[in-house]
Amino acid sequence: MAPPVVRGTAAWKYFGDFRDGLLAGQVLVLQVAHPVVAAGVRDHSDYTEDPWTRLMRTGASLSIYVYGGSAGARVEADRLRAVHRRFTGLSDGRRYSALDPAAYAWVHATLVKVPVDAQRFFGHPLSSSELEEYYAQMCDIGRMLGVRERDLPPDWAGFLDYYDSMVAGFSRNPTIDQLFETIRTVRKPVRWLPDTWWRWHARTQMFLIRATLPPALRDLLGLQWTLRDQRRFSRFASAVRVLATPIPAGSRTAHMRWIGKLNVWFRAHPRAYRALVRGDGPGSFSRG
Image (cartoon, rainbow, N blue to C red):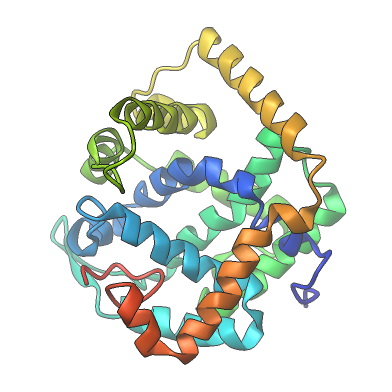
């Protein structure tokens, strides 16, 4: 049994670190590389039309699990599973469900890996003891979400083997291509953003995806990566590391902790939530 997620523990320090946001594109690619997730996103998600509302829902849902307290997390987990139970369909002639155990576990696994990768790229790698505590805490959260104990390995070493084997089994699919096209062409969230800045943002997102994807998957997807790119990324990562590492963990995670507590309040006041955000709530595929 892992220690609860409280101030100073590994999940509290790393899951909501603002540097995790630099891997947002990477984790989306890894999730939709799974064929069941790809089919669910293709059939039930509105992210190509309204990615900003979708992003807000997802961020709000994630914040509740780690920073919203155990009671809030249980309520959110029950709500999320009820929403996703509706999402079924056909893929390559076979029925799929958004609650397919292997796919559901994989989505959670990608979120478990993001903070570890973010620290490896842009901070300092977690120690062995931190990794074990962090992984145990995230497994407990996964079980709360409905991830079966047998669907994720019992320790970090086993998790890395599982993660690598999953990535090795993926292939390119149309949902990944659509994701790349959406990143390149999606409309601005607000009109006043300069067009030049928005084009730079899209290029940066694609650069970070190419930089942080597992190299074998990057090659499979036909994403070019050169020595010049590696030098650029190394300089960028070093700058982030120098600027962010001295900031206390409490400040690096403050935004996610605030969002988590706010959304626990929203769960208790659904009318207020519906007045502000369309759809079924954080983390849903719903088109609203």
